[in-house]
Length: 303
Length: 165
Image 1 (tube, rainbow over the protein chains, first blue to last red):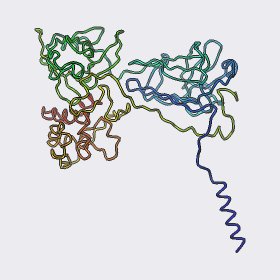
Image 2 (image 1 turned 120 degrees about the vertical axis):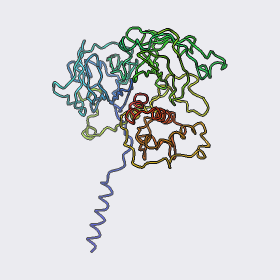
Image 3 (image 1 turned 30 degrees about the vertical axis):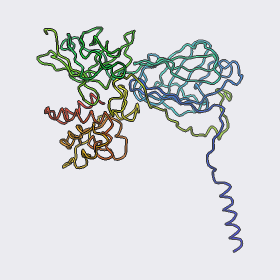
Image 4 (image 1 turned 60 degrees about the vertical axis):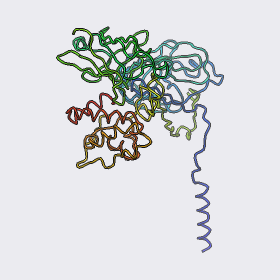
């Protein structure tokens, strides 16, 4: 009996000692980092461990040998995930999750994405046709101690993904598929082109002016560079020059172009609903996201 | 390669499973004219918003439910229950007239990710997100307008997706 008790106590003690302890924080030489960016509904997510230079020099051609297949990071391979198809430096990349590798050379590097996202940094994948490969030319930038990936530039159609460690900077250009084209066939545009008289049902300057701003404006719809455009005079600063983006038959969201003519915002909460009869628009309602009509327009010209 | 990238070379460390931290996808800001916010009790949604929850990845799929046979508006808040949101009374009045249509519409505001969600009709039942959510209100008003104009449920769904999807 005493043996049984002793055995039970021993087993209990062993179980206590061997039981896994609760996971505690753990310092890593290369802590895990994430960075993400959304562009027009395309979500880009990167996960990577971030090595530090720690006075090691040179980093490339030293810590990372020339010719080495290096994952930009440490530990488990850096992953690159997108929810929609994109182009990376002009090369098509299907939606999915990839491990990222770079063949490091003194001048031109080769970047490749492998569809096997889970890989350890010491085990780069063999070359396969499923990989996306392209060359990049590193640049030199002011020193950065911790390897960093980020998006220094974004636009309505893409972003620059930058990777830097030490003074070595590698930019890659991401281009996304637009959720809606801003172009419209010339024949389709004809129905809407012309001059309209716009009457606001609200004060378009509310919150900025005294509420006594003009409640009527000239709204001119024209065609330029393949897009249906509109000019509003007078109009609040955010509503003077617009690109009309078709979302359904005779329905458009106004978009705003920057000085270079690039789309930088779509006012998805506003919809122009044209009233088209016999192939020509007679006018339109401008509706707020709640479907409330905040302005109406009637055609002024003789079309 | 042991030093490459500051690798952590022990077997136990190699076996570690990286925690998926996830990427914070909330997108805020964006262009918003002055009048878009601060109008009565409206929520100050940016014009480029993807949904009431502000998630960039709010549900965008065209996943319209089939209306439940015999569904009625008994769960839709009454005007007495809208004392804290009188601005929403008109759209609640409309939904009470078309429960069988509203029950066949997907709500794109992001509430579809919440437990208990079924259709746009749910947005008008307790706790009634449509009291404050301009997307719920917009879908409700547009659904009513198109239904009164003689559009079919499929045509209404297509319009909803075009405007809110």
